[in-house]
Amino acid sequence: MIRLLNVESFTLQQFKDEECPPYVIISHRWAEDPSQEVVYDDMAQPPKLRSSRLKSKPASASKITQACQKVLEHTNGEITHLWLDTVCIKQDNPMELSTAINSMYRLYEEAKVCFAYLSDFPSTEVQTLGQSDWFNRGWTLQELIAPREVQFFDRDWRLLGDKWDLRKELTSRTNIDKKYLIDSMFKNFASVSKRMSWMVGRRTTVPEDTAYCLLGIFDVNMPLLYGEGKKRAFRRLQEEIMKHSDDQTLFVWRSEDLASEVCTGLLAPTPDWFRTTGNYRRSFRSYSLCNEPYHMTNKGVAIYVRLHDVPIDRMDEFIGKIVGTHVGALACEDDRGRGMGVHLQHLVGDQYRRVKTNEILDLSEIEGVTDADLEYLQRIYVC
Image (cartoon, rainbow, N blue to C red; front, side, top):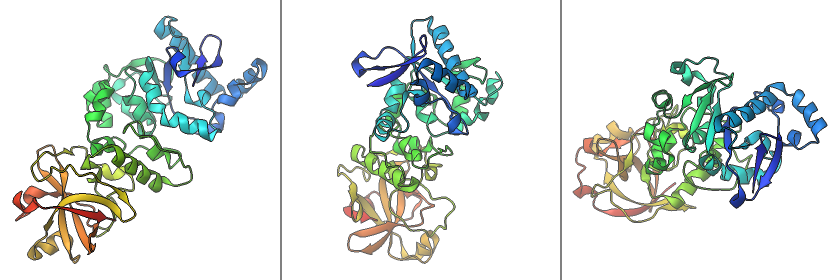
């Protein structure tokens, strides 16, 4: 089921998925004070009470009425429905909210056009488009990529251009290559680390939404558990990605603002740790080929890797005083075709942990590491 706003009658209507009419979808930023947004409960009231509530929230009401007018203008009256999260989702209904968030990417993807309303952008000078806070929000990432067509409007609802017109400015501001911006089908060819890097620097009001807003970017679904915290939510997202992808660039991240001796598992606590890894991709070099699956267990990530001992005389250069350290070769490489690896410290038996997490190793620069040295495939657990 989908709920849409009829732009002619200004009423909410509900449709079965197979009976859904064409619609325009809105991308916007919520008001700093969420109580000032017109929501479903306001729109669902009888006409007189609804009018009273809208008058009490003039900025949000104006946004909605202006959007309705633009739908009719843009489509010459051929489309009469729009979707806006504030009024089309019962925000206080956990089940409906979870369903909406898990299907959000599809909602934007199936819209005829998306209107991106930049409420803080006062100028038609597109060169400064990136100054809008719209580009700093987590949810707007999928709202930029998923729709076939995105029309950008300034705060006065003046048209700035579409994704194609503004591709240069958008790529410069977001670090997302234009091919992913123009055709969302290409996103599935982007490595996991590249897609994670698109989220770097973006923020969400609710901590857990840092993970939840990426569900569509990775084509995964999972239950929403508000209150679990940002780190736990992001960990669950990565575990879900592992169930559907064998792309080991998921493990190629660098820690930030931590001592280089920090020890951890293979999963990052935040997408910001993918800041410098957008150029990594899967590798098809001989020592990287591995058809064995990896997955999360109660001992950590179970994964088949090729290990190479760090020479004793090079130990200080690599990891200081940490002993029992190996290079774990991952099935990924940079854009120059150089194989990548991470520091792994042996704990006991088949258990390891990642150390010196602020480094990703270029295997070609490590003395003594050759394809022959990395031929032995070993299953280990990284906790």
